[in-house]
Length: 381
Image (cartoon, rainbow, N blue to C red; front, side, top):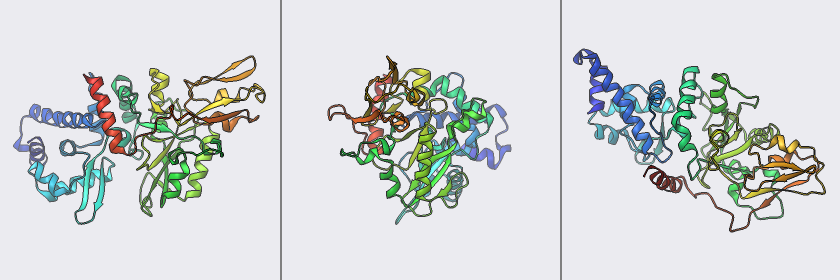
């Protein structure tokens, strides 16, 4: 009903002469979408100020918002979506393709069915696809939303992201789970791309940027040429992707990716000064902002010269000094390997956790959503 009224307004605005009614209808479209997005396990919590609605209005037209609010994570054809809304299929398909181009929904091609469209979360989802569109106003809206409400879902278990240790810091004499190696994902891909970190772009736009490099978020796909025609993603070869990971290590950035072992399509290089996920630890004291790796750092007291280089590198404040020797707070260590790769004395190594300590990530995104949904229900009770 809502979408039909909005379509009537855009097609023949004179048919709805009461401007207050029109404004209320449009506002309801964004509220309906916000509610739908919050039903996704990732979360999109409401605020008292309503700034989340301003965010949506920057991206979606009222008609797009109303249509998206009727969709689900399960991909459907335009025919099904149109029938669900009692609308003309050709018009709905045009709207859907337009939203795909804006990075607001997902598109898949399924044999025998053709184009399939699905809703995606705010984070990780359509927010990260706005590199080409983000402006200062949008960045300010996001910052206000993050601080007022969104940080709550970024610090909930299971974490949105997990740490991937710097691969060269992983001991070579142990069996390592494939999900702990970035090369596992890069080697199995057929195309690779790099784009600007949306978090550092957002912070820069509000005058709080950091000195870390910006263009180093890696994406990859099993489909050849997947990034050849994208505006905000620069297509690269695998060798450059590996080089970007090395550069991120030198810059003191933490490798992280989606918190599942399969269906991984990106690797971020994060910092606590800008990353929307790691900021949960610094600004809100949450230990669940990001999932740990299967390792923790250990220091050889004899080899350590007390240079303190590692202290500057640690994003998690897990290192300290005692009588001129580096110490590790195991509880605070997330096993990223940044301290290991920078130690000039080779005094720090990564140790693998015991089998009892290892908590493997969910196998699939669907498994992650189920666990996340259960945890959100507990919090909301």
